[in-house]
Image 1 (cartoon, rainbow, N blue to C red):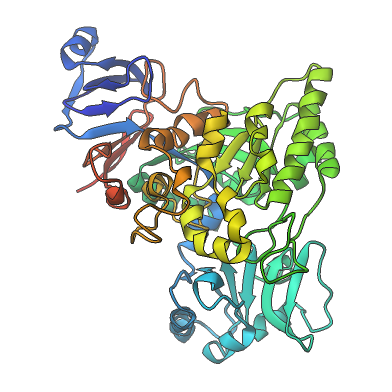
Image 2: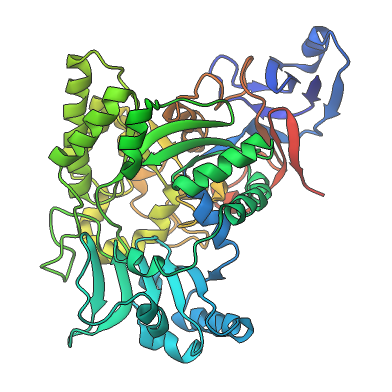
Length: 528
């Protein structure tokens, strides 16, 4: 039994918002209140820990995470640079120590932060003459390969575009080395696959990094190998994060035949929803839009399917008890998903099926007519605040005035929708304090674009934003009865902060430091 006292505790429990002590036992919270009162309840030997006036919050959950991709990205070339030249310098540096023929892998480039033009194999070739190079974009919806990688993948000037993908070509029809959407798989088939043991090792090594950021849980959106690695770690009692595991749409038939349902699992690892993709992303201009991208009159993005086709997947998932979650970024993509969900709600009612918690991932831009539909249909808006500040200049350039309806957290909250916040790591940093900062300021860490922020009418208060990383994320994963707040009976997941984030200037949120993280009543991280 542990008694943490002399703390400034924000419980996120409306019945008792603040406290100075919390009593824990067996991985759960026994009571929250004042030290003197809780001491009278401790009928066993108690480990009393003076928190020295520090702030305690419920553990934070990242509601959109790619665990395998993130863990493996920690060993790749970091291409998140301010200039293409710096990215190329890093590639050249790695090439100097690589064996001939060894694949050089990297992640994080964003051409919208460079010159706006997609990079080419010709850029890479001089810096990597003896190695194939494959670099995924920050969005994970584009990639950049050198000539050696294209040859190993069998991509020539005559290779046709795959369904829902693009091999970028120059005016003469030559493949440039930039790949969009499903075209990434053409090269990825040739990249050596990490073994299950390598994924398991990488995920385990990534856990302490997330604890240090204040994360105690994630909603994982990677595929089979990630799920297998998580199960292996869980079996060996090495999984020390709460993981809500979402399943790829291509495995829906298998899940259906097995009778797998949303919620199956335990407090550490449980099944979430079935994940589908409706469109691409803003950066590579593949998000599906009603109107063309500015200065590209023929380009409205890529719509992978319409609402009718999506509904057929939704219906099959609902029949077996699986929720749906769909990636949708462009206004047309979101519209089609909402149409499918509207039919799904009717189907659930007509067939007396459970009214499951369906989600849309990203919700980056909506047609104004669709904004109220999340609340009306009881659909969760799973969003990533840091996307707004990362993408704002690209959004202004590519969507123009439509950006007034982009990343509209305040609009959704005002209508009454459930918000769940995350990072889409490794697309963005999983540091939740960067997301909190973006949500309450609509600014980058350097204060740009202005003191008021980008479309400041969409700002949230800090309690509202924090709720999306705690209560909202718990609700989205059907775990609101055990996660998301510090209350009797809830799991003992909490973080200790050096400063009271409710007392500092919002501009200081990116520098907020976690001094300790507890999961299941055990300290998994403590600063020196």
